[in-house]
Image (tube, rainbow over all chains, first blue to last red; front, side, top):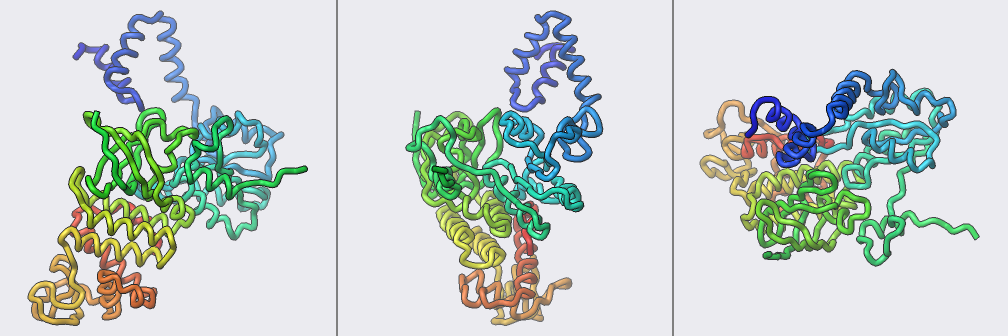
Length: 199
Length: 241
């Protein structure tokens, strides 16, 4: 147990996800030994992020204005919306440079065991966005786990009457792996989603 | 380092650290065990998909100081995958899994609960019956295995032969006019017949039942469950009745 400010810092760092007491202590002592300018920059970044960053009023991605960078970009395709669970999923999809439409961040997945139902997610806001008829395709890109799958099945049921093209990201074999190591569920889905080879 | 291997059904998962998960499984021999699946959240994980709720697996773990760690998993039946594709089945399955988690203790063998759970999850995955009927049948039978069998025919207090019109959760089920406490419910006779059929596994009667009686039976089952568990099952709120 340390005294005063050092212990306060360790306690605060220990509240961060994935940081245990030992890691918190190591980071605290690293900060004590670091250049004051570096620590100042870190403190400034922490306060700035809380002051400046908010959720986009359209897609609920993180933004520094009322709307995020993607929603403000006039070159983006207005007819396609990709539905994801978290803002970090937007970053992952943007890295692929394959998708030119816009996003909708649900804020999680349906998880009855954790008390998270459809009303706790931004499903109603998605339905409102689809109301004006501009969007013609909804791509559901929830996580490829059972909660993500169940959320996708709930959304597809909700979107049935909108007359849209509703698609789900394909599941299958990771690039760079060996087929013999694939598990049955992944391999089964890869078979389900097999595609024609153009010759 | 002691290794063990058992047949199991995954009850729930919780995120741990960067890419790990704490996985609660009900095993056939050892009872409920909490194990760590290392790196299972990575897309290249070899057994991440096998450690999802509702999956029927053959698992090998080594014992740790606080939590055991998964070393190998094989899928016996991918029930969870089939269930997640149908939203009503999935909400019913999560209520089944949560109830099982609440009714079993860690490291206490619970073979009857295991077999009951396997039957319910298999039935939901195979879409054998209405998911709500499977859920109510599971809840009633799981409570019976835990020692809280409700009575739907004879009086739960004095044993007077039924059928009786009154139903009281605290009394333990159907109650005769002499034992009927104030505030007892008066469900339709068909509802009590349906609940008795679900408890006994009489699917011919259950499948033929009226939706009105199914809804009433679900309400009584949920009240009975909540009374005995003292705390509600969160997933039940999401089940579409």
